[in-house]
Length: 151
Image 1 (cartoon, rainbow, N blue to C red):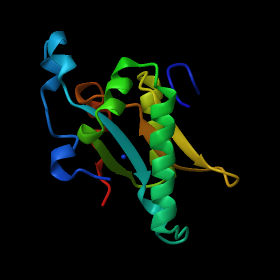
Image 2 (cartoon, rainbow, N blue to C red):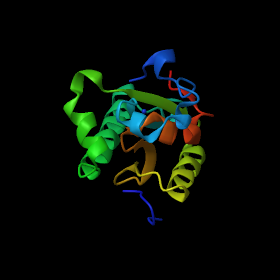
Image 3 (cartoon, one colour):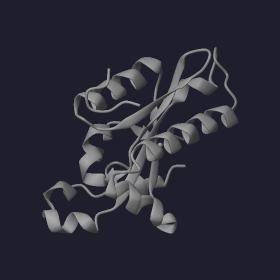
């Protein structure tokens, strides 16, 4: 688990990091109605040569990271609200080109106190993806805005 102090199914254009620009300017009382989203960042190179992972393996790793991030944050009222609104869950899956990029993103999130789970495939010790704890879009999107949707 990566958090402060410790050393994304795509929703298409609607769920892109660009959606809702300016949301950070909302008044604090409006944040209760702001969209809660979980971002998942997956290595794009896993299905390509030389690794050639199956799509099923990649998707399973993303699911593991998503659930782990949610479970680790279950004491957070925002996460509780997210899991009780099943029909309104928002997830955005983004692509990291390779392992180095994924680790850099994880380090940036950690530096900025953004709780997330970096999923490492065992026993090979291969970082495959990360999932951010569900939170208000305005608190996370600027950290991931340069990434493209995973397609």
